[in-house]
Image 1 (spheres, rainbow, N blue to C red):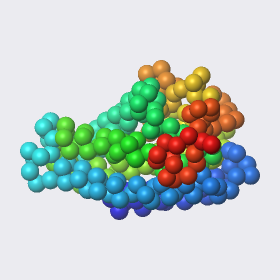
Image 2: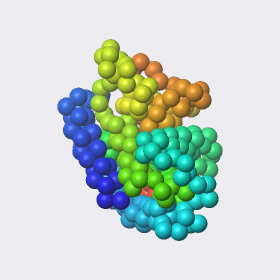
Image 3: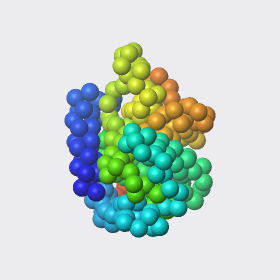
Length: 258
């Protein structure tokens, strides 16, 4: 848990620094949205700590009977163990995220994350507690209930979790991502990035709803939900009756914007 916290804090600090140095949207410094995002992250952290500890005990506990009913002992090489965990976790997050947008009840809570109009490295911290709980439950269910990974190397699950944290931080950065640069062009569909994810946050989400991947944009390409365009959208956030009051408590209570 300490590792994931350090990684997340490091990615946010790095992302904010890069956003100041190479901004996609110029003239934006530390905003009210950033303060709300950080406060929300601090509020939800104890819940994440408790649930993560539960998941680790289930996944790596001494009793295999409490560690998932599908035994994965056949995956003996750490590289195969890591690939399995990362790909399965990323695949599950893609479909959960897609459901968050397509199932009205789930969207009620997920729109808290989309309420920010300033997308930067802190934006991944802004979410409703219900949205947060379901996202935290994914690895617990996969690796504490369904699959028995108690024989995996100790570092496999933490590193797989951290890859998702890194992807989240990279994707929300306020960093220019020009496709005229061959490095960025090659990166576009290899791993999540600011241009790819900016189109997930476009305010015109009704007409441009997609790019759900957490780590690998390939899921959106494969399942037909890729909506990336060469330039980032002009506006972010929500509009009309979807808009929410912009403070920590009223976001959690889903209060509409005044």
